[in-house]
Length: 211
Image (tube, rainbow, N blue to C red; front, top):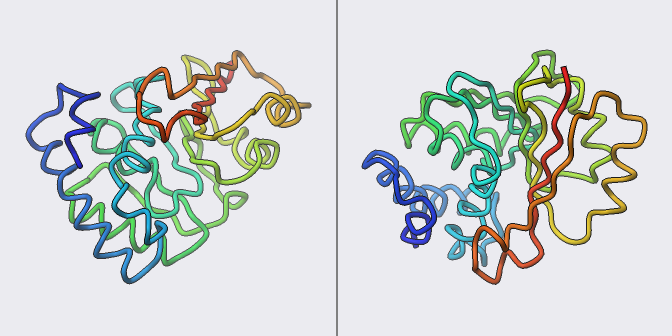
């Protein structure tokens, strides 16, 4: 239930409370029509999807006016919860599957999120630059870096914030091989941020790009 969000983010506005509370009914409605979340998992929406998405906000606070691309956004995670949390940040939601973009468009509209823009396209066809890229376990890191690294402007903490689980040491070493201009890499165990069992193996990988 939404109270779990307020436990970890106690300073939300009334509007943000309303938006978070609306998410369950909206996702339940759309998930019956277009499957974007495992149907048996919809009851775990607030912990497994919304709070998981917001772990990124515990690692980095996006500056007002910045642009964040959610690459492979699926049904809107992590981008939609982050767009609620950061109303002064512009989110570009990108996915190659049109039905998923349709869900994002409708949920963003019903939540009155005017800081979301959607793109139905493949990652390699994106032509614009962004300050940050966020994503949730879309593919192995090596492939994701090939898709995304040249889309980031770099400097001032800009980079990738990637949600993934398990032991990532080998995947990181393979994924960054040959990639230029990496300024810093940090790996945060989400279990140090949120105490729920779901997060025991979950991590936020933050790869900063130099200027």
